[in-house]
Image 1 (cartoon, chains in turn red, green):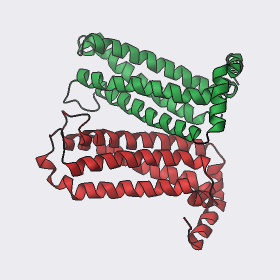
Image 2 (tube, helix red, strand yellow):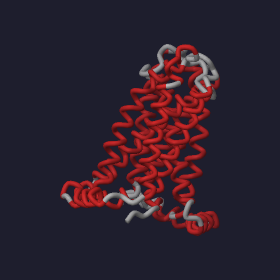
Image 3 (cartoon, rainbow over the protein chains, first blue to last red):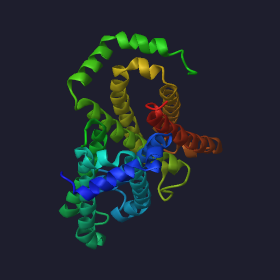
Image 4 (cartoon, helix red, strand yellow):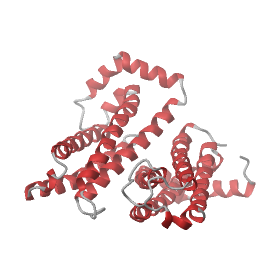
Length: 168
Length: 169
């Protein structure tokens, strides 16, 4: 994807600051990676638990609302930490990252996962009371669960591909 | 580096046909390394979350309204399957450059932590297989289960940290 010039200029300016270079070249980088791994485990793991339940494959003896109530705090804490650690990991080579196709794909997939979640909350979740304890939730909920699982696995794969792909 | 005892093992491993095959496969297929790493992360997530839910339940942090036995019986098989995938996907990367891994303190510490965590999980599994209420039956077992759970969480987390640091130390 071709990006506007001001964005590219801004990214290269960020990457040339002292603090960005300090992060990239010190123990802080592997430390950020470690935080990123733990936070992605929390995000993907808890989302997968809910998605499997929506698909009717697992946790059938838990109601959907109980399961999401118990897992969602971990999901959000994980997500916030993943965004912060991820952003700090990119600053040292911001220009390279934002032009890297795998990185762009990863951000797009996160965005789509967000849209999927919003649609899920606007449509099937509205009458969750009527299917909360059912082993097979309505089709819309199952589709949301399937899309969520697929998109987040895609996020992981795209993230892993960044190191094997080149930006401008 | 402190741990040098294992270096010859790495060198020997590098001469095996399996190691040659791994190197050849990774060199010939550019998609194989990122695919392998992606599977490693997915399996790591599965192992960590399944183990964490069981251990946090043993510690009384989550899901106290349900008994631990059925939960463990459902989740531990997931932990074991994920472990197999982790060994296979991690094994491919080690076979690619065994000399480097077996000279890395971080890798060797990681393996030590994994072995201890797996040993504990076997003990835990042994109890749950005998009886779903095995770890609740006596005060001594309850104490052992709780302390083991706390230690195991630290061991698995430590293995993740060491794994991430292999490339830097």
